Length: 182
Image (cartoon, rainbow, N blue to C red):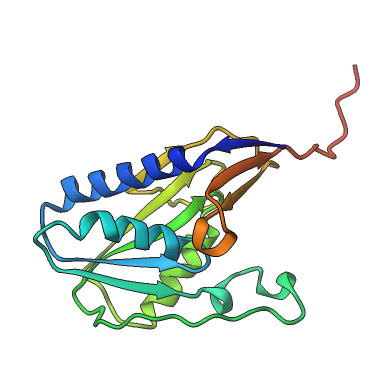
């Protein structure tokens, strides 16, 4: 297992996200909503880079634990964290932020959770890493880094605030599918 992305790579990905959001939203008010756990840290970093803009910026954190379609398979006692959306969602331009986009199921759950808080005028998606292999028709509007992975690989993101360091590791998993007969 080797480090695929360094702290510098992650910082550059966050910079790309902030630059693309800045360009596409042209100074209009936006609300960054980070998906717990790590999407919120990515969102906070993007917010820091956008803070120099002359615009209204809101920040929120969304816990999607109860909205996941694999909730019953997670743990016997799942760890529920708080959502914190301290602004009205009605009519807001929301940019959901996550660390990795894979199957699209996390984003689907986030959209369900977000709808319990109100009806935004627009919702977009920003991801630090897009690794492909969708199971749902969900694509990011803003991507910091695109990684080429195999379907069974694990993409392990470590971020300073939660894990004590910034790095991304890709762990290759062996397929247990039988090989075709020769």
